[in-house]
Length: 126
Image 1 (cartoon, one colour):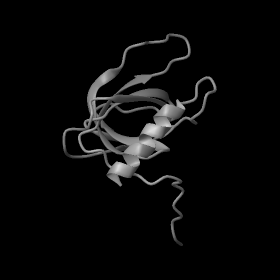
Image 2 (tube, rainbow, N blue to C red; image 1 turned 135 degrees about the horizontal axis):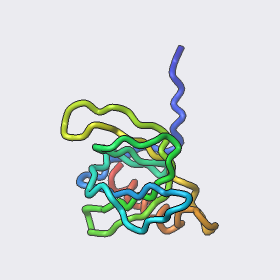
Image 3 (tube, rainbow, N blue to C red; image 1 turned 135 degrees about the vertical axis):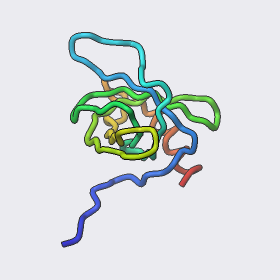
Image 4 (tube, helix red, strand yellow; image 1 turned 180 degrees about the horizontal axis):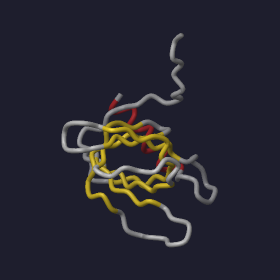
């Protein structure tokens, strides 16, 4: 029985990219990001994998600030944690997978500008 790939978007590496995160809570909104500069494992138009010292709850809503090493810019993207696994070795304990929320002009969507920037990065790093 072969395993079917469900991925709609190809992953690519952004050497030197890091992120910080904010876990969104229903009642108490925080404007600050935490986690320092966490290494990005890889990214696609649909989501991201990153290393972490902290475990994340499945279905947690997160906002990620991704720091791009090429030009010092950052992207802010919202998404949901879809998986987390142990990552033995190195200096991080977990590998976290986040699916990005849809892109568009509606409330709580990711900016179309962010999608354009990701497409540009995909062309450069694929």
